[in-house]
Length: 415
Image (cartoon, rainbow, N blue to C red; front, side):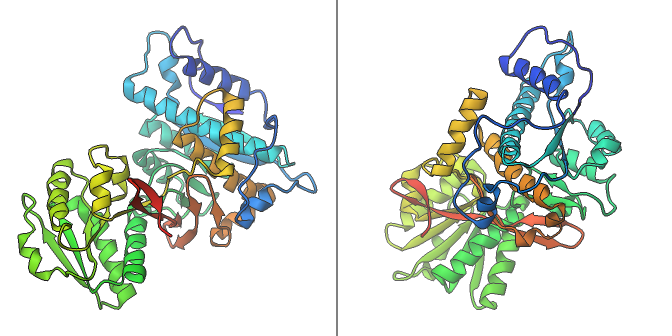
């Protein structure tokens, strides 16, 4: 069943939007997902995925899942047009939906039974809040969405009592911003990245001192505070943390504290291009004389202005929760099935949709009670692994991130 607003014929425009319109209308006619041409092969590990490949012995009850995505179908009305931003949101919604549905199709082919309901959040707070009052949405076994933080806040502000789980599918926003016990945050928030970096530095590098280089912007505290807290806890405050605000790349005052024989660990939580270009060049000069290891913000892997040669010279490490190994057999199988089904290349949103559809679809299809303790159900997906912890009043949070290092001028997982 599909619930969207103002269905009217599409007059002209993007072919993907035409496909979107046809897919949504056609999907409304079928409460049960039809199997894909062939089941998608799953990765060999861990147990959660191995179990997903086993046929269901008896037909289970129908599991109802509602997706709340920003399709923006009002923009298909006569006289209306997609803006660059709304078109980007619609593409995101369609990609995630296609990945999620492909996962459910794979499980359906094994004997599971789903009813997938689509709703257009339209990227609007009022619409997100209105959907929270929709009885069909509220009755779902799982609600996935809305996507954007402000929409999530508007939606979850209505559904505060203990009820069915609400999946935040793509936002890494801190759960504390929503304070909802039903929330499942699947994209690890920034503090998880900071904690993972702290654990690796403490357990593997074992430094006596860590330098945190700051630009002065308060946003960096979102990384610095949990990082320092994790280091203090892990080392029992035996590691000296030196926080230093860098002005115009000047690091001269730090030189007397540097070691010529042991790794000097620098944590740089900034995402400001001008600051990074100057500061990393200064570190590059120091690296000609001192052994240096840099830990950067997870956003660094998306910054084209940061060159691999410079980052490798600085022995740079970053954390990531969405890097895909395109050489892995599970990824190859997914790509082939996705192309065969949709005749286009999958985006990162499609891959995340597939992982989340496979994980939550299997747990719900097997036994909805499995969602009450996600800590017992770890999972290795195509873009990231899932390891959930529960925080009272904040719901379930995926804390798994990977550590990568620049080797041979590209990011590779640390061994």
